[in-house]
Image 1 (cartoon, rainbow, N blue to C red):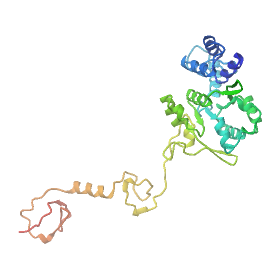
Image 2: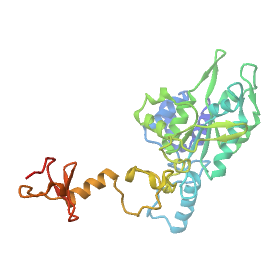
Image 3: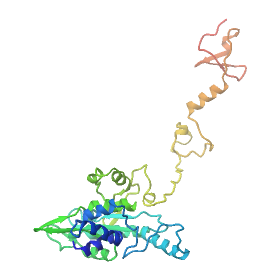
Image 4: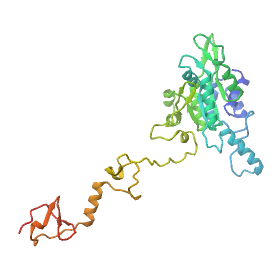
Length: 338
């Protein structure tokens, strides 16, 4: 890849021209793209940290001696770049090959699937959307690599949504850079969401932070005809909702008011997860716990040596109940006799 092509590629990823020139000057123009990207990450460069030739100027928020009017403009541009409103929605990084092959039933590379996924996130309000596809997908389709609606890739590239990962031919053989590494790196740096049905197990073993990130930020999906459908519970039934999963500021879950199917006959007590309108709003105890609490609160030890008339007492489970009074007496389970 030529120097100008490398510059354009890394600027599309959000790196500043100065950082790319510095790294290329250090490693040489013949350095592999993967090596240059690794050097940019190791030197602390982050996408969108400086002004790029094709992007807005991004500066830290706060008082830094910039006039208020300039800060408002820069703040608006920052929100537009990272996701509006006020960066409430997470950036989206799409595994283009995985999405296209899923839409094509693993028989053809269906570019329409990528367009459907991009449109779904656009309709939700996401503004930062990147799709990664190997550059050899621009080649004319062949019988062993069928591609449908290839013009979609050209349109997404013009919209600065699609990014081609490098590939070249050496002695007639295609050398392809690992596009999955681009996808995970960019999503990790942007603190975004990975859209793919791939688990990236090989990349999870490379970096513990990547392992956690992939486990917590991977959004899988299905295609129902021409409908892109991610799950409503991306992390399982007890995990966050899809809206909270895609948001930087999740909303607290609403309480469940589903009535208990057993109604007044329910014996679960406080452990019942359903709503009981017949019960007072204060905390409820299980039936057995309530009886134990009443027994401990009302019971006292009594001397039974002078008691007469055992027929007046009904000894049951260690408790004696005098018929004449409503008081409870704790006693040992024994025969009361003269």
